Structure formats: C-alpha cells, structure tokens
Image (tube, rainbow, N blue to C red; front, side, top):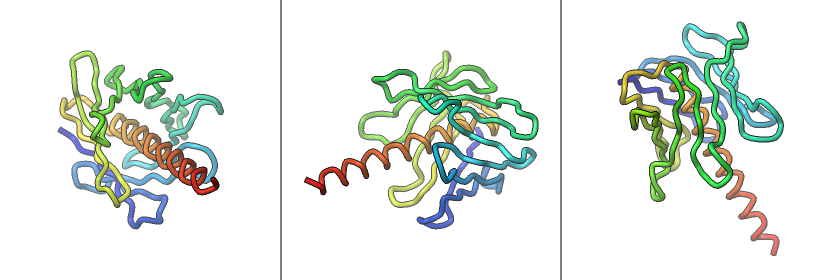
Length: 168
C-alpha cells in the first residue's frame, strides 16, 4: 500500500512538496495561466499535467523529455462529478466518496483500489492512498493532480458566486 502526499509549505504558495511513503519524492507547481501543473518526481524530471485542448476537461500527464503520456483524466460526463482515468495499471474512475465527504475513491472493474482526500480544512494539499498495491507513483500523481484540479475549480466557482452576490 503506497501513499503519495502533497503539502503546501504555506497557505500562499502555489508549490507543493510530494512525499511517497513519507520520503521526499518531488514537487509540483500550478501554472500561472490556464489549468495545469508542472511537476518533477524522483527519477523523472519535468512532468506536465495539462488540458489537451482549450475546451473540455481532458487532462494529460506527460514526461516532457520523452513526450510519453503517463496517464490521462477526463470528466466522465456533464452531470457527474466522476472522472475517467487512464493509468499504467489500466482504466479507472475517480468517484466522489459521498455528499458529506470532500474525498474521492479510485475504482476499477474489481472495486475500490484507492482513495484521495484533502489533508485538512485549512491546509493545502492531499493524500492519495493505493489500497490495491497496483498503482505506480505516476498513477498516484495523476489521481492527486486530478483531485487538485477539482478543488481548484470548486474554489473558483465559489469565489465567482461570492463576487456575484456582493454586486447585487
């Protein structure tokens, strides 16, 4: 059972430090413009998680040196919070853990294989846990960055609603 954790050094930082099973394993930083992240992991320098096109939600994790696609994520549908994932271990889905939970479950044809949860209410970051023993570090990163994308979209949506309410 592997665990990848991302922690922000402080609340105003866009850089997150990655720890795999408690050991430093890399970092990622949000891009200034658009959705996406630049990451580095032990053994793999310069990874990019970005939208494949300017419309839609299809995200791709790519090794920038080789151009190899390491995983993808895409919204499962218009009226769902689930995301379809393409991981090195095969197809999976990121599904909300429930209406009163901020976390998501990673599922595939054999059932729940992992979870991703927010570290704390007021602390930036997340923890991805592989319950099946089948997910590689890049799979855990795809899940974590997809979760970070979901969290960022929720923040933008709630801040735009708050601004709209203040204007009336």
